[in-house]
Image (cartoon, rainbow over all chains, first blue to last red; front, side, top):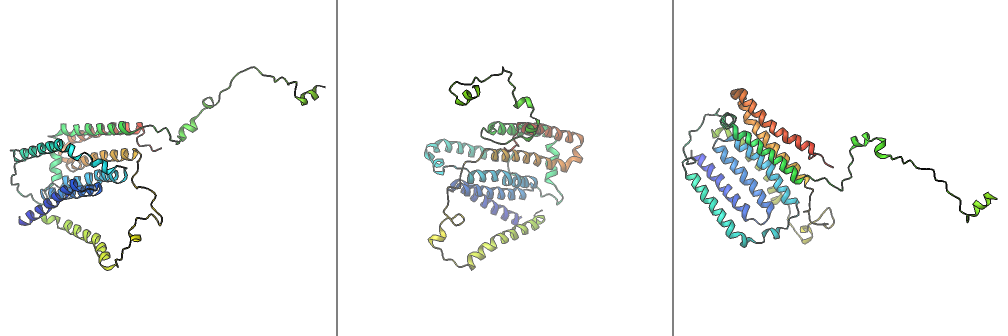
Length: 211
Length: 118
């Protein structure tokens, strides 16, 4: 058990260090990379708690997808970093109050009867946390599970509605539409009387033909 | 239980050594004589044109966000696949309903042309 505790405190120390660096470092790229480190160590702590599926999902989803998007935004987008830091002291009272409230809430939750630390017996080697999760997720927690799909659907539609615009300057062609075009789409035949051009008198060539 | 993770710990240590080894070796072995010309930023031999940060088409983020959403959908499939034998038909139908709702989103995305790149 001593070795377990040693690993836990090592990971927790790295996690705290990374979390503090996320909010104190001046370069947002370093902040994002420290957040990746925090996710990795949190996954390690979850592995200690035998929550293997959650740990792997944290690494795959957050580190593999979300943080890559974050890094892409931070590194590529033209953000004025000095402007982002403006108004720190103006926002401090509001942000400090909210932060304090969240800290108080966390202490209340963690010291309450639902999340109070209990000693969990170590499971046997063939215990599968993934199977345990699946057993309750698709039966007892069926409604939250289906609601999760609705939340994802809302996110899909919101992302498309917010960002998708028809580009006016796009010069791309749709070959299918080009092939399907009919004669009457492009060609307009106008019926009109024949116009005979009367030869002008001043034209010397026309005079010659007359005589 | 932790003994099962010993190979993974070994993997992490070997991976760290492989990653850090060349860097540390290069730092120790190579000569280190910086001058102002060597330390200046360069772009294939000529002066840097402009800042690397620029405005990107929002479609990059749209594709990335859609990827993350369907990535999450896949994450829900793993525990389901592990216990499918135990939860039976009800569990199977639950997942089909879940997938159906997301297929609605997928069809919407396809029809809107969010996956087209022009």
